[in-house]
Length: 164
Image 1 (cartoon, rainbow, N blue to C red):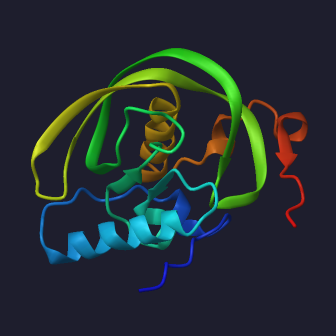
Image 2 (image 1 turned 90 degrees about the vertical axis):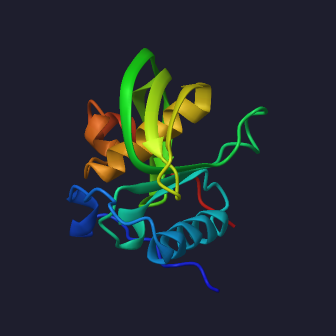
Image 3 (image 1 turned 180 degrees about the vertical axis):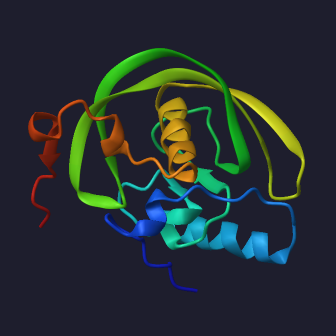
């Protein structure tokens, strides 16, 4: 199956809050598969949220295993960040704003709880790029984009280098 087209800013669906998942069924498994397939199709894709493919469900996928050893793919259904610490300014991008990156503060440590695709409740402490990515994807589920955290768009938003 093909990846799903990624919604890009200013698509209004990216600004809407998602609905909690109540049914852990085949349609959820199809959504998770579409998210994984679409994320993998992107050269720098390490996370994706359902609104980015046009679905207003509280589902996201984070996979930083190629960048950070000891991590594995997280299927986050109805995630809630319980605690976060250690904010750090760093450069960030987003598949829904493919031409831009910006410096903004994200937390390098957080504790998150969620359900997996079978409805089981899980909790984890995340650190480093995994924590940053989880926070970014949970923001998507709330209709928040990374540019909303940028202090000054005029000076802190940068065009990505031209791709060959």
